[in-house]
Amino acid sequence: MESNRQMKFRILVLVLVSFFTKAFASDNFPKAQGVTWSSFNFKSMLTWSPKPTNYSYTVEFSELGRNRERTPHCIRTMETECDLTAELKNLKATYNADILSEPMRGVNSDLVEFPHVTSERFSPYSDTLIGRPEFKIEVNNDERKTTLLVTDVPTALFKNVNERLNIRDVFGDDLLYKVTYRKAKSTGKKEKISKSSIIELTDLDQGVSYCFNIQVYLPSRAPEKQHGELSHIQCSPEDGTSIFEEYGMGVIVGAIFIIILAITAIIIVIVMCCRRRKQPKNTGKEGLPLNGV
Image 1: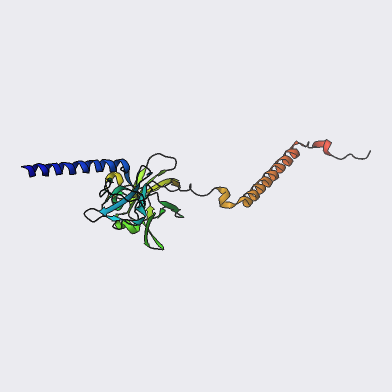
Image 2: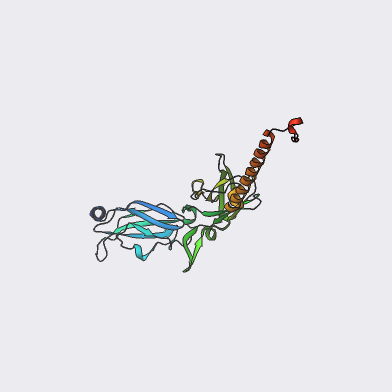
């Protein structure tokens, strides 16, 4: 009976020690707050708060179901962010991370377990935000076809030291582009989905200026994450060239000068004809010469 009481007493002591130890640790090493993943063009960052004073943070991360890892630049750091871009090698995997609150570098502690906070799950392939693409507009000479030449957005990932990957290298056939276009003087819009970075449009009215927006479209993702940022609006030129562009200023000035000369000559001829008609004509005896007396 006595041994049971002693056992219960020891358990109670251990519980109390553990409780007060954790309370002490929480007071000295506050837990991280607002732990958030952010990723833009596959540059993946983990951020949190507050800024530490007399303690530090250590980041541990892992694929779900695998052992936790650490990256050297996020061990006992005084920063409140950790760049994990190069560490998340399996882009399609799902990750989570723990932010541990620990003593500063060079400071020892008797604590075995430090306060920590676990992040939400994150997958680079499914969650990174894709930026706006750049593109050029080419209109055929006969104006029957307009081609949009899209530059695939570069990412923060590298194949090797000197070769950066773009989004087509990463997404492959999953990558589509959505084009939204309208007549420059209209509000009605149309859409086109393209698998290629070279987008040809043949349903446009000839001689009409059109305005275009392009964005990445990833239908394999969750609906709220399927679209990248919209590009800047670009518009095709108006139909044809002006008369000044077609013939040049010199030719036009020469033509105007010739026209003025022609009009002047016509006016002179008309004036002379009018004067001749107004002169009196001599008829009958009045028109004969006088004979000598």
